[in-house]
Structure formats: structure tokens, C-alpha cells
Length: 86
Length: 151
Image (cartoon, rainbow over all chains, first blue to last red; front, side, top):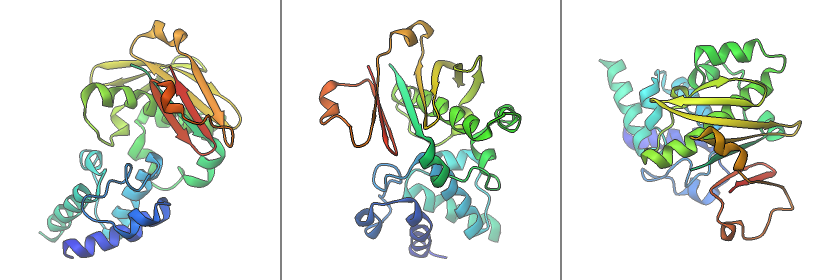
């Protein structure tokens, strides 16, 4: 899965938790879950759990701490997928 | 520096399913999970602990300049129904909570005695005050129907 595919999958995951349709439509690496998508912090946990299920990876607490935007989240998913593949 | 956090309990009910597998484990320490499982009202305990963590985080985040999403390292201790403290990396924030049927509101301060001096304004939609920013609140919390300001 390349970066664009991961971002596309992320978009599907975060959609139910955001009402910011314009920011969702223009989601990219710089999109911040809280500042741009106005996602409630209690729902960030749902997003983490959805990511774990969708990508079949485990997000540890240190990784979760960084997952406030698309860029950091994509990087963490990429590295966990690579670790799984190895 | 002050912190505050309000949870609209009706919205929380529909917005978050904390009974989802692994959900609590991402947010709460083992001790906090015991408080939830042994509470008469587990929903109320989940959102009480959550509002304590959020109100303390809002101070800690401004103090350290670090943004992160690490609710589990904010460790809550509940002293009585409404008094508690949140510990993170050697810092302690004292909290006082107002638990009502439709909402939970928590205020936080690094100095226990300052809690008594905090002025609180809670507005319920559609009666939000127009330009609340001009009133220079020390901390703003917004969830569902509620807007909570502290000074």
C-alpha cells in the first residue's frame, strides 16, 4: 500500500467523525484531525481502533500520542505495515 | 493557568461507544478501569475521568508547548465525589467537577487553593453569548449543547 492509498483509506475512516465536509474533501498530509476536521478527542480513540482493524496493525501508546494529523498517522501506518511484512 | 472541560452526556452517549473492545485500554490506566467497572454509574465515571484528563491536559499542553494524544499518561485520582487530581510527568493538577444529569464539567488548576477562586460560566445552546472571546476567558470548552468558560 503506498502513501496515497493509505491517505485514501484514512479519509474513509475519519469521515464518520467529522462534519467538516470541505476539509474532508481536501484531506492531505497537512490535515490536522482536531484543528481542521474538528474531530472530538474521544473519537480519536475510535479512529485509532479503526486503523488497527483496517490495517491489521497494533498502535502502541507512544505512536498514538503522535497521531494528531494525517502526516504523522500515515508515517506510523507505513512503518507498522513494513514491520509486519518483515 | 486554568483548565476546564465539559462533556454533553447526551451527545457522548451517541458519539462515543466506550464499551467498544480495547477502547478503555487506550485511554485509562488499570486503576481507572477498576473505578469504571466498580462504579454504580459506569457511564458517568467514564466521562468524569475523561473531563478530568482533558481539563488537566489543557493546562499541561500550554505549559510544555507539546501537543500529543496520550490520555493514559494523565493519571487520575479521585478524592471525593467532586475533588480529584491528575498527575502527569511529575506535575499535579487539582480538579473539581460538577456532575449534573445532562453534563459533567471539570475545572483544573496546578494550585489547589485557586480552584475556589475560579469563575465559571456555562451556556446551553441556543443561548451562547455572542462574542465570548472578548471576555478573555482563561480556558474554553465546547461540547454538544454546552459552552463552558473559566476566568
